[in-house]
Amino acid sequence: RVKWGTKYDAEYANKLARAVRRHLPRCSKVVCFTDNAEGLDETCVEPRPLPTEAGLEAWWLKAYLFSAAAGLEGPVLYLDLDTVVCGSLEPLAAAARTSGALATLGTDDLANENRRGGYNSSVLAWTAPGFVEVWELLAEPHAYAALTSVVYKFDHWLEMLISEAVVVQDALPGCCVEYMRDVRPNGEAPPPDASVVCFPLEPKPHDVRTDFVKEHWV
Image 1 (spheres, rainbow, N blue to C red):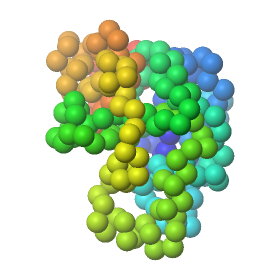
Image 2 (image 1 turned 135 degrees about the vertical axis):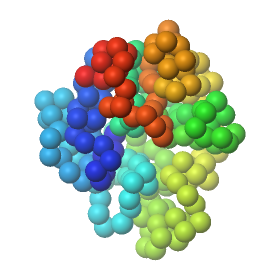
Image 3 (image 1 turned 30 degrees about the vertical axis):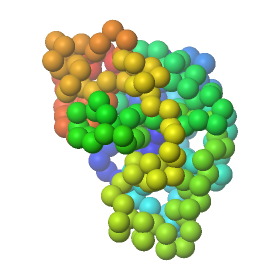
């Protein structure tokens, strides 16, 4: 996961780390790349620094996960901080072990996207090192400034570089769902096959006081 700036506090990272350890017991390491490790519970999550030299901000810092300097090796499962884990992560971890493939969410059935055929990087799974061009091209001198003048967000950058990602909703139907579309209308209960609930836009997990969040976001 990546924590940058002040939008999400340390408890977002801590709660997500605890959830990963509950729902993926075989996970050897939970890492949070951040510009401020204050408040992170190092008994459950390892803080690592984000780069400063390239000048990247916000979601663009996800690109650093694909760099050699990030030090990631083997299967990697990335989750955005504003997700709540409520079921086994083993199916997603298995996707990370699929050699040569990048798995991510597709935009077709995400209500907040309003576009088809794209990627949503709230969830990423791959085997590292891999897809190093995601970082290396962006880290070239002046590349970030030039790219972000015409490309809105990191998801679009992935679409430009990786044409055949595995779409998680196709490979694992029902595994990743949206809070406003799939949980709130379902009596505040996630669908039975759901493992990850995404909270794009508003509300965020800390805004929701239901039993579902109280049980799983701890």
